Length: 237
Image 1 (tube, rainbow, N blue to C red):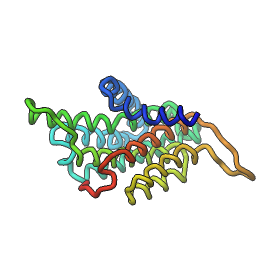
Image 2 (tube, helix red, strand yellow; image 1 turned 90 degrees about the horizontal axis):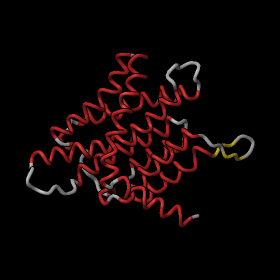
Image 3 (tube, one colour; image 1 turned 30 degrees about the vertical axis):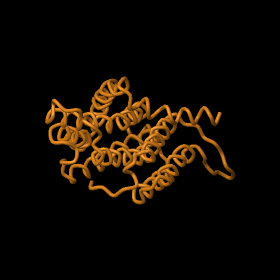
Image 4 (cartoon, rainbow, N blue to C red; image 1 turned 90 degrees about the vertical axis):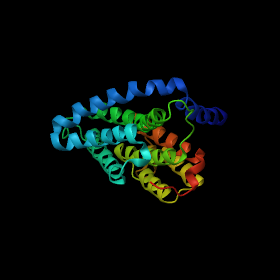
């Protein structure tokens, strides 16, 4: 069993970074974006538009200027914008009668969007460099990869918060502040354990599909960070 899990952990990042998976990413990202827009904008037109529009603005700026030239304020606003659908969709899942947003489907689409957003940024950043140097082979943009990874890990913190966990987001914030390989691995393990273990007069194991999706996504992100050479270095965000 442990050998199977080890092979699975090694295989998932390879598949995510494969050419076949990269071609599928837009087919997940854009439908999830449209579905979230249909849920959030009618509920609150102003806030919903900002929740969806700011991350799309970040993506558009990345496509035409490169991810490292996107103003820091846009990066920060994207992180803040991601928190609001996490709050509304997570609250809706826990109290469906108060938030008429098809909460389970909404939360699932939010998890899909979070999974697809960082690879889309990588895709747009690569297209930016391809447009500037069409006749050259584009290598790995390490500062851009580190910036996108930081965004991806913040979204991992957000998604664990959305599914109702309290410990994993806190450990994730600590790992973001103290960037080391062992903190990333610790955050991944906490994501896989904390959402399902509860204490009510004794320790109990609780299964929840939304928590499982969020936990796998967040753990995958932290394991990718642990493998990233620049994770232990200080880079400009």
